Image (cartoon, rainbow, N blue to C red; front, side, top):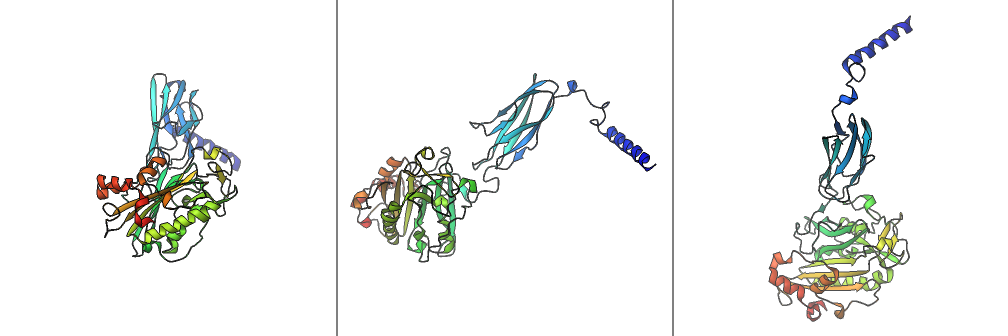
Length: 404
């Protein structure tokens, strides 16, 4: 008796559902040949992370799907672009958005003469809550040490902050990061005796730079695989010993490049010491440390200059072809050595060099810019005018007594 009652109740429940929803009752369902075309995306907006979603097509005949977006190549793809009848499991796959700004695309459904369009928006870095301090251009910050940046070179401009000796928040260093080669093309920072400090080295290896995802970074708790390469600081640890927090940031892998041990520990270390001396004699010394990277490094020879080494998990890291430093000295009380209180000096060294930096190594800012194809100290003209800035950058440092 119980089973019979239960069966009657089940039939009644199904009948009730059928009366409310045409999908349950065949007599209420619109024949597919009369269904108007419809297109829907599982989500209309997504975060910056890569992912996938379902695309649903409702149609009575043959149809095609197409993605339309401004980027080339497109950052999304479809599992199928044509079919017939309704289909609810077309998969749209999209890549990670590494740009600062959000982006969007349209999915176009064509059924005979009818079209339907659905739009997908993907967050950028800033609209996703940010990846720390990543900004669009160096000129937007106005800091004197910054080179120019570009919107279309695939590199990312970012910076880290620290507490100054006076307790206020200021930039520690800025950098221009290359995710494909896992090195920064340059690191820029202000330096003087006060900012340098007199504390100690933290050796805080192995922490990820919070401005980037782990997959975008070299993992460097240990040294590189490839033989004879150090984890070479671009901003030296010794230039940031005012406090532990500032020093720890110098151990992020974004501040490292694979440097030949003999180069890093000898001539480059000596040069870094000389720059600290210059900083102690300045109100502020604005420093750019950079490297020259072959775009095809990670397709080059393993363990070679201009080729690549590997990080601790096997990711390829470019080995630079050359290194350079450009410094801009500011001294308010004297204009004897420059223009508007500023004078500059630069040095360019092949990575295979064994020659110590000396007066004969010095070149003008202009000459270095021609070698590396980069506009250094891009914010200087705004501070002292175009004419004086041009004189600072053209000045030959070999004849300027403060450097040697």
